[in-house]
Every structure is written in C-alpha cells, then in structure tokens.
Image 1 (cartoon, helix red, strand yellow):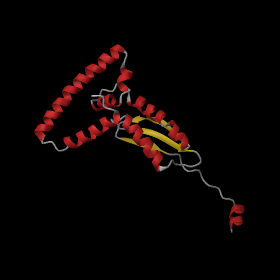
Image 2 (cartoon, one colour):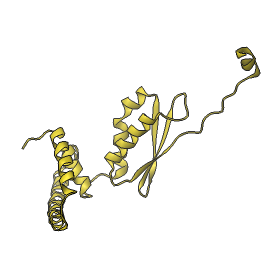
Image 3 (cartoon, one colour):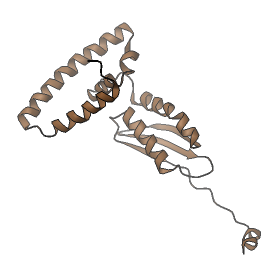
Image 4 (cartoon, helix red, strand yellow):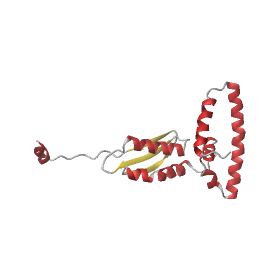
Length: 164
C-alpha cells in the first residue's frame, strides 16, 4: 500500500469513528479479528527479536502504535517516556524549561518540570510534555507534574520607597 504516516493517522481516525457505531455482534467479530492479528503480531515481534531487528519495528509509527495497542511493545514504558522527553529537548531549551523523569507509579508517570527564572512552566509547555509522554506510553493514564515551590520575593523598604 505504501501509505505515509499522515495517511495512516487519517485512516486510524476514520476507523475509530466507524468502530464506535458498530452493533454488538459486529463488535465481537472485529474483536476476534483484532485478537488474531495481535497473535500474529506477537509472533512477528519474537521473530524480529531473534533476528535483531526490533528497532526497525519500534521505529515505524504504525507498527509502534499496533504494538502498543496489543500490549506487545518490547520496550518498558520508562524507556519510551525517557525517549519522548529526549525528543522534546530543543522545544524545552527554547522555553528555558527542564524536565526530570521521577518514576512511574501505577498508572501515572511522575515528572518534575522547572523553568529558568520562574516557579512553574507555562501551560502550553506542560501540555506538550504530557502529550508526548502519554503518546509514548499510552498504557499510562496520566502524568503527575511537580513544579518547584515559588521562591519568596524579597522587597526591601528602599525599593518600596523609591516606587512611591
């Protein structure tokens, strides 16, 4: 077929809309087919591991999506989250923001985000980080983001007098 990634994304969105309108019997049939494809994909993953070509599979967006959907991705969620954060390095540097991976607890990834010169990162930055890590590890339900406490601001009497 030779679809590019954008065409695949469009097709997935269309398919998700169609699946939501299926009657229960058709839904059961689709689930049986998905289970069969999942078993076949599991075998492909094992063969790829034996052949040493797993990175080629996990590097493809569509295959990576299918591996995640079937719970077959060979990399741990932590590895995928760290890679997603590495992929944001230029974006974070542009916003003078740093993100520290603090672990995974149950369904949540814990992150510490700090922005140079301010206590909390801007909302668009935190949302971009959250989207990236949850896309990399969709089995996680949420990102718990910690920001440093605001530093106290010291205003001297001289500064107050000079502004009056």
